[in-house]
Amino acid sequence: MNPCLLIPIYDHKDEIRGVLESLAGFGLHCIVVDDGSGSETRAALDAAEKDHPWVEVYHRDFNGGRGAALTSGYRLAAKRGFSHAIQLDADGQHDARDVPRFLAAIEANPEALVLGSPIFDASVPKSRLYGRQISRFMVWLATLSFDISDPLCGFRGIPLAAAVKLVESVRLGEHMEFDPHLAIQLYWRGTPVVNLPTRVVYATHGLSHFDFVRDNLRLAGVYVAALGGMLFRSPRLLARHASSGT
Image (tube, rainbow, N blue to C red):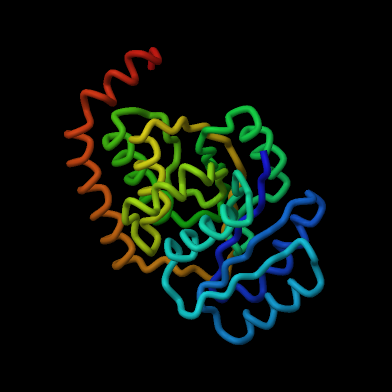
């Protein structure tokens, strides 16, 4: 097993140094994919790369969206010879102290997709919480199971061989729909799922790139298509659950 850290970023110049410093003690190479950020964030990333030899920054030429950045990150991490990526967000929402727990889960289940299952505090916006419940329900329908506890959390362990093979063959979307679509498609292909509870916080004045209208429409499109895909795959999905006893 040869894991790395992977962080997509777009204009989180004020948070990224703290995020990186929280990861410094784990001895892991960290790939930061800059999705066409402005000059201040680029400068902050270049300084972090200079100060931390274990940090590698990859600058995309333009802002393509979260999915585009993660796709670039998976390909680059695999090219560097890493087997897994521990994926975190750049805004400080995720508790870096859980990285060893994700590493342990990957080591115990090297073929699995390890998904963070968020434990929220009072900082979570109610609109996000309700929307998350809808996403969970739609993914349960699409997979005919409760195996995916949360399809949206950005803190996850990615088996890179399976993920790169998937992104080379299926268009998963370039924005916020990427994470749930990846989870659904990997599940359909037989990838085991491990859910790991992890604390998630929302900063009071945190910068969010979630577009309430456009991204919800993109998510809805993924879920509608996934329900159609489920109908086609339902015999195999049901047989999978029967064989596993779930």
